[in-house]
Length: 121
Image (cartoon, rainbow, N blue to C red):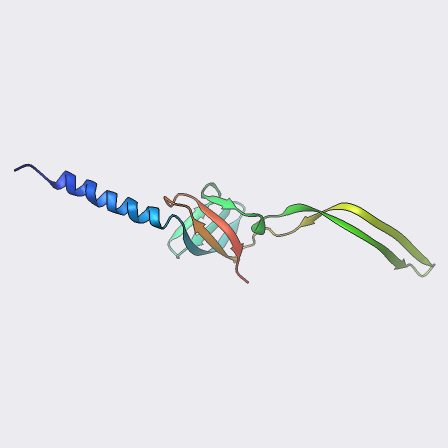
């Protein structure tokens, strides 16, 4: 009779791959431990660096274009100053991660990359 240990290893790996294919994404939680360079600790045992992270817009500073139509009024003790604002304007949204932020991560199949989906409130 031949050696079946190699075949057994192949069968085990095939079973593991089938299980991973059924659950391609895992939800995890982490804590930001550094912002420059960005590092997130998960499960108190693994630290993820920027190279392994995919940041969603929910956790980055970004610019949005907004439409407004309003008038500002200021009283400078010498009279009123009015300024009309209308149309599209760019605004910076300050949404970058900070140290100790708790975040929700999605582990991409294979476990090499993680999507930082959002922060916990």
